[in-house]
Image (cartoon, rainbow, N blue to C red; front, side, top):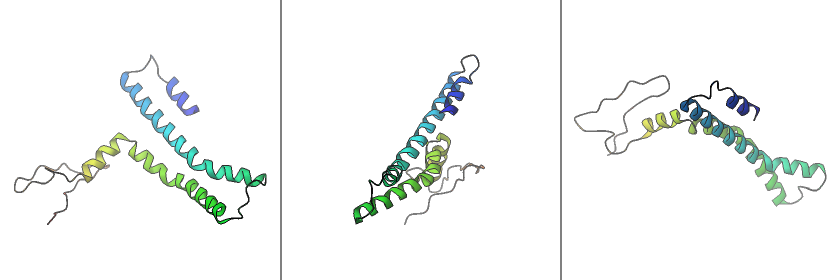
Length: 131
């Protein structure tokens, strides 16, 4: 949260509307990433604390399964971070839609629409032909 407080204090002269909008987006991404991390790691941390005070003993299939699922959730945190950053980025979503969308008007017979040249961050291509 220190990062967010420094971000919001860094504006000189109040900042422009665009600057405030960017700061809100960064704040939203940071809060979502922290919330995802905390919620995915919380179950295993509770189990580990309970095990350390001899309250949780993995002596049944259910408790063992609960511990395994908690570990899987914790490790999912590492897998979900790139997805969160990607799909919370407006630029990524626009480029992703541009590449994936194959709806009406995306391919015209005869009169092909102009396809922009690919950039470093996006690739464009035609939709597959459907028989």
